[in-house]
Image 1 (tube, rainbow, N blue to C red):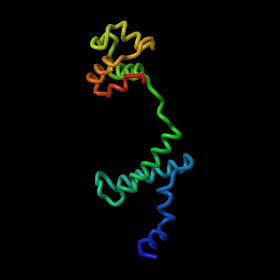
Image 2 (image 1 turned 45 degrees about the vertical axis):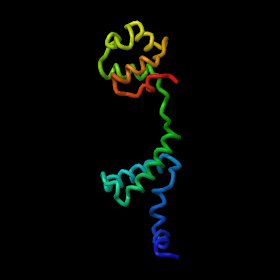
Image 3 (image 1 turned 90 degrees about the vertical axis):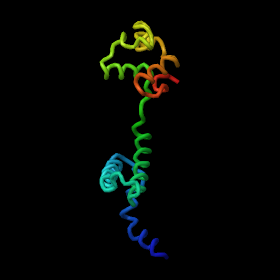
Image 4 (image 1 turned 180 degrees about the horizontal axis):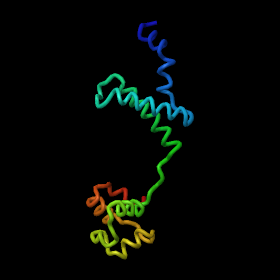
Length: 135
């Protein structure tokens, strides 16, 4: 056995939990805490020896999140409403999208945002146009 393999065998019980997909919330929380500690050590140094480990741990955490905490689908109208609320905009503040009645119909779900409107919203708010489309 090579020295490298001998060292891996010796240290594997300590490293394995960092490279094992969490089976439940307790393991997930431990993995997140361990990754946070490693990220504090790595900082912005992408060449740090532990950067690859942190990346693999992040992949495991992301996979767990996607399975156990999937992001809900958001309609274009819901995205627009959230932006308007955040920025204090009223229905009359988006004339480039349409009249106040058109905006009202979009927000109430009676009308969908079309491609032209999505492009206008994308340019105005610097979000991808696809975010406003219900595909």
